[in-house]
Each structure stands twice: as C-alpha cells, then as structure tokens.
Length: 298
Image 1 (tube, rainbow, N blue to C red):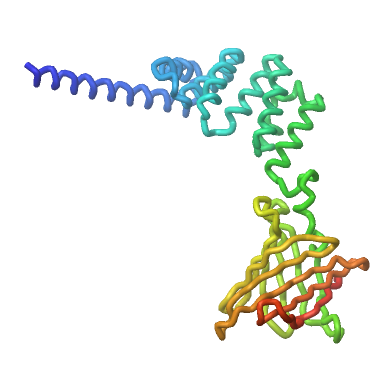
Image 2: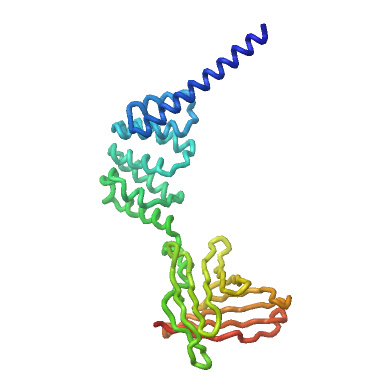
C-alpha cells in the first residue's frame, strides 16, 4: 500500500512541475510578443502562487503600465523592487509610472532615492517620455545630475581629487631640462569617462611606452602602471601635493638588486610640466638623478 502512495505522490509532483513549466513558457512567450493582457494574467497567476517571484511581479507590472493601469503597476513594481529584482529599470518604471499617474512627489522622491543609492544609468532617465511632467522641477535636474555623476564619478566636482593630474593632459614635446635637446614626445589623454590619465610616450633615444594613471578612491592614492617593450613593468603609488604629483616605487633589477624610485611631476607656472626621476640602491640613504625632463605643449 505504501508504494502505491509513494508512486501517486511522485506522479503528482511530476504533473505539477510540468504544469508549472508550461505556465512559465506561456508567460514568457506572451511577454516576448508584448501580449500585455496575457502577460498580466499569466504573471499575475505566478505572483499569486509564489509571492517571492520578483520576475513575475516585474513583468506583470510591465503589462499593467502598457495598458495604463498605473496604480496597479506601481504596486507590482514595488514588490519587484522590495524583492531586489536585479534589473535596474524596475526603479525607472517605478518613478515613471508615478509621474504618468500625476503623483509627481512620489516620482521625484523615487528619483532622488535612486540617485542617492548609486543608480548610474542617466540615459534611461533622459529617454523616458513619462518624466515630461516633472522635468521642469529643479529636483528632477538635481537628481539627474547626481545620476550622471554616479555613471562618471571622476567628473563629479565634489570629488576634485580625480582631477588633480589633469595638468599633465595634452600634446607635448619633451626636452632634457639641463641640456636642452629634445628627448621625445608624448600624448597624454583622459580616457574611460575621464577616470584614467593615459600616457603615450615615444622616446627619441629610448623606449616607446605607455602608462595608466588613476586615483584610487579606496586607498586615496594615485597609481601609475608603466609598460614598454622591455621585459618588466613599473608600478608607482603616490599623492598630489602643492602642484606636484609625487610617485614612489621599488623593484628588483636584473642583477637582483632592490631599486627605489621617486618620480615627481611639477605643474609649472608657464604651463610646462617637469618630470623628475631619482633612484636609490641603498634603501633611500642616497639618491641619484635618473632623468630630468620638461614637457612643453606643441
């Protein structure tokens, strides 16, 4: 008798799973085809049977907003957001539906919350037509500006440390500061949302190389990673102080000797940049000049 009961329970579980898969498949097809009444019905059924199904709440919300049932859509999107639905557009829909329903304060509060919590997709806000009713409000502009800075934090004026090395950006002819002859040229650019200072160096008597310079907000230090055609690389760390970028490094040379380096960039009053390298083979007791260059704008 027991085996009959077990077999019946297994058959019931299989039938239930098959039915669930069929419902999911039908719901997914309806969503793909933008069949919004079916989307509402099928995903509504799924959300009712499993209130923790964030995707069901989100997609039901999409169906409701497309049929202009904004109040119900808001409720569905709130459920999806509370369940931490991973697609960030859930917050855009939440704010846009509030604006479309005339709940401007709710829309603005949601946008401000998004901005404060690091939402970093300004184009999703700019392209959403339902925000037309709140775009003239200064709070909308302020929230959008913060969202824009979230996407490009290095351009945020409240964090000027990211811009400390901008004095090196430009197209340069480079000269030996003592002898006066040209030693190379360099193109220094801001890349990756202006977060990286990218150096392209062409030496007339030495290596061709590149460096990547970036302010690390965690360590609160500047870093430089230098590479050229040689077999090694160089990594510097440092900080900005009084119109100088001060880098230090240590490495082991081909002879197995530890070498310390000090690399300093001076932002000079005439717009030129001095680059001064010193090295030490005795743990900083004495220092020797590696080179002393001056960058002049082309």
